[in-house]
Image 1 (cartoon, helix red, strand yellow):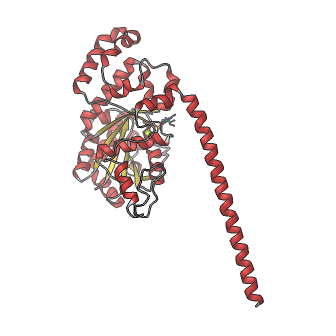
Image 2: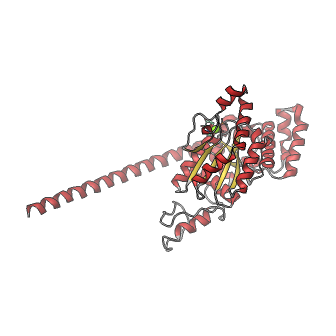
Image 3: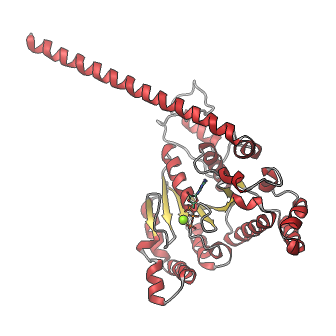
Length: 356
Ligand SMILES: Nc1nc2c(ncn2[C@@H]2O[C@H](COP(=O)(O)OP(=O)(O)OP(=O)(O)O)[C@@H](O)[C@H]2O)c(=O)[nH]1
Ligand SMILES: [Mg+2]
């Protein structure tokens, strides 16, 4: 049963970068992964692409042939993909059942909020056995303005209702959050979406004319009680691991690594257990079934890392990287030395043999 993610979100929210980051992370974890590019306007694809919609249709051809603009052309491409679903299905079958699949969607929000093609494609994938989660990225800078925050809440809710998948909303680029000014509240207020009436003062300040409308939208969002956010800084390993864990929980994916793979660093594992059991124990505790662990398992830790004590953490990380770099160099030097000694002894041995 193939597991995977439909990665959606507004233009520039970081979808393709996230797919690239996840591809690298999974390679490091020995989890097989394939990325499907469904954006026919994606020229600079950063990740190795297993299936590319451009080999079926390109936005440029559609615009030239049908005299459509970029938005109309994009909708046409998605409708064309829906009509040619067999093309996608055949290529997915070639990838096999054990590969984790990421679908990188275009940034047009209507595709995940009201246009039906993506919804229909997802329904067919789900019917054919795919266990997918929608991962909806929203740029974290929207939380620095109350009315923009209300708009991403609305957008996220709409996508949740439209795509009908286990859904994980994500505030992306959280590492840049302090660049856009002070937050009115701590990060957990925005990620947990608890009591939006606290936004009243901030809404009066940012857009007094639409305060009542915004508050009415807030109460609608609270009535649904569905929206919440995870955070993501794509270059931060902890952040990527935490998000992976939350998505595994949403889809119910339990990754079981091959028996001979190493226990990942920092994993709580029974040292006395035979090597064939250890990785499996780790995987059970680290994916869907396990509790959320790790230094940034709590959004308050994320607040400390990226908002309250960002400079101190950056400086600390630099020192750690330097130490890691030195350790790698030393290890390489040691291995080189051992190899050279082995080679010299081998040469001596064969010289003695030929002398005898
Ligand atoms: N600092 C930081 N930058 C990020 C992060 N994620 C993405 N970016 C940057 O955001 C920009 C847009 O990223 P993309 O991955 O192209 O965004 P996208 O959602 O695929 O964009 P479209 O396909 O055009 O909709 C790029 O310059 C990325 O480097 C992040 O976590 N932190
Ligand atoms: Mg993209």
